[in-house]
Length: 111
Image 1 (cartoon, rainbow, N blue to C red):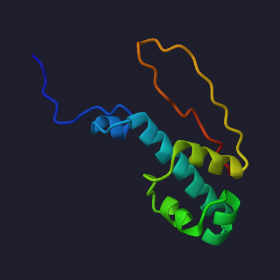
Image 2 (image 1 turned 135 degrees about the vertical axis):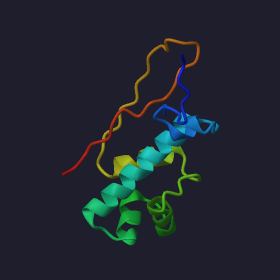
Image 3 (image 1 turned 180 degrees about the vertical axis):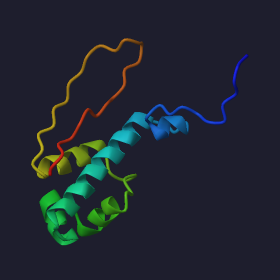
Image 4 (image 1 turned 90 degrees about the horizontal axis):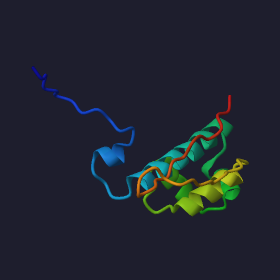
């Protein structure tokens, strides 16, 4: 006897679970933006100060803090994270399947 489920087991990527295009890139942009916003709040700096530190216009800081990351490329988010003093390492390996995927392993956690 099989039991019916009224729920779906997550893949740990909400964008993939909802069938969005480029789910891995979307998740990575979201994770990077969350890290940047968290770090701005942790440092207790103003949006103006954050804009100077991140080398972006102040209205873009506001968009980041509102989690509106659609217009931020991965490259730009990488640059902002490095402006916060984080070394990013990008590496590759052959995929087990025909198509590879992109994963953001971890970002530093500050106390």
